[in-house]
Image (tube, rainbow, N blue to C red; front, side, top):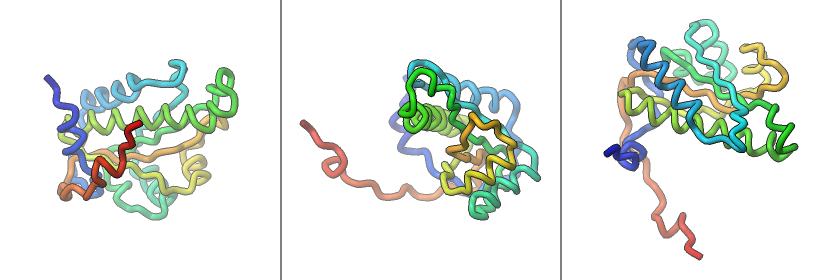
Length: 171
């Protein structure tokens, strides 16, 4: 049996990558993890850009407040909402459900990457308009996450967590 909780606890945010080229079959498994995540009304209103181009990775790193480690990763995944969800769920779909859809997909991919021996980090600090321009996104797409993916050069110690009694409220 797969120990999902162990994978969740062992996964770390990785910002230092080795010079390892991710094989095509591994990249395919990451893509599958993205699309098999749940989505509101099963509309799957999300798109993902897989970026390997060094120039584009540097543009993304610059847009992400100069977080240079983004450009060092062999693969960078940019998760975007797709406002097509508006047709079914109105503005709440655009403002919330679509972001939840991308978030669920990214977490599934991060766990799949961990299972493949790869490291990831969720980057949410970026200038949205610069990412949009760099990727030449159509107006229906909005970038919400940048995720560098690669073999970890080092794995940090686990960060502290709040006690369950602080986070869980039983009613």
